[in-house]
Image 1 (cartoon, helix red, strand yellow):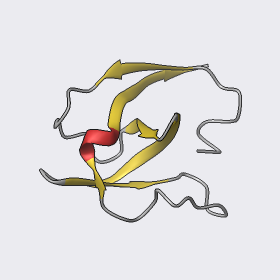
Image 2 (cartoon, one colour):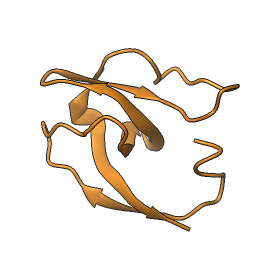
Image 3 (tube, rainbow, N blue to C red):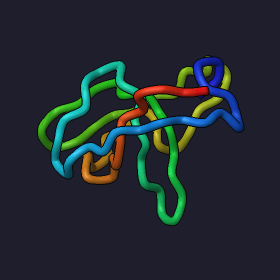
Image 4 (tube, rainbow, N blue to C red):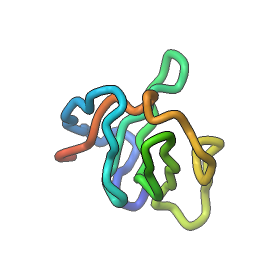
Length: 80
């Protein structure tokens, strides 16, 4: 999520109820197996969510493809 967030940044999140729709532009935490990934919401509807990273040089397998919005567990509300 660089340049917005850097490795080692501390993020505070707010829970998102299962099935809730995050707004485009929100930074969210996504469950990825036993890990968590932080990405920005690129698009969202009632069935799925599409995420993007902020880096123009790096990408992720979680970006630019529809994912179940039930994998989103929280919204980033602050970072340090």
